[in-house]
Length: 470
Image (cartoon, rainbow, N blue to C red; front, side, top):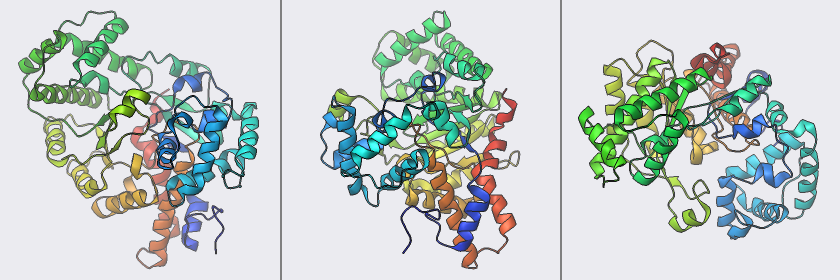
């Protein structure tokens, strides 16, 4: 019987062990999509205790605690930090076979050298030991990142952001490159005109310009796009239920914008046309600058309206959606391709039943200009666990070239999440190792090792071309 979480965790064969330890384990991390707060990196925050760095904002853990019968006061409420941690420790033993059980103990090992299992019996000791370590300089935010051998981080930033925190990080000479990503979801939120108008007003303040027409709106957003590019951005990101690809004339979208600004009622067609037009313009700008555009598709958000009112968004009440994805995705990508304006693109899918569709759709729009130009992105959100990663890797292997994949990301708000790259690398090496030992792949360790290293690091380094950003 193997011991839990030992050095060969998730590695079932000798070849898998060799691939991981000799080729994958030591590579730096490029985390090209996450939600880490740049202000905390800029300020090099030291967290007061383990709850502050580990539980706050982690809706994965919050969902598990609610499922275990823990009241909201111990999750997003006003209980003390230790009381919240104690309830998490009481939940962990019930997370067996949930990825949280693996991640929890992997993170305790990698960050704090703690090999004990977290439970009510060990909660006080682990909390105190980790909290004490967090007070030392080597456990500041910047050092937590460096501890995981991170080379590049791309945060997720609104077009109205001033990017001062990114500039401070750069000015300080921090060895990890922390870059912004352009996330304009709020700029196309026509199904909530009150929120959209408030956002447009904010853009007016940021730009120092009056936005009294759709053309002016585009001009201000393009200026923000240019501003992001001047400050090291080369990636956009969109979190959408599905792609929007409704046909819309310029006069129609101008009229819709006027209706928005005069607070008139929008019909469903108006909403779809406005979103489609905005998404098209963003994509054209990305192509002009040779950016990478990312589309996170398929989340059904804020399902529990009572909880949304009490706790707000991003608190663990989102789920996998069952949207029709294929036709609009095809129409959207095809229009850009026909106009020769299709940027490098990564499609992330949240509904596993759409895996094969997404992988084959990406393959429709490769044109031989760039290896792996169209990417079926890594298993995302609810799918970034062993089964989800394995299915995604097998799908891209069967439908495309897994050897050209740009690897894993954390998509996390937590500075404790970087071991997920290790989790992915172990699963990847296990798949290749098993195939070699089963005679399904040749026993060419040198070539297979190179492919493993490309997927884990070098493909992303080439694809995003971060070296050109000074």
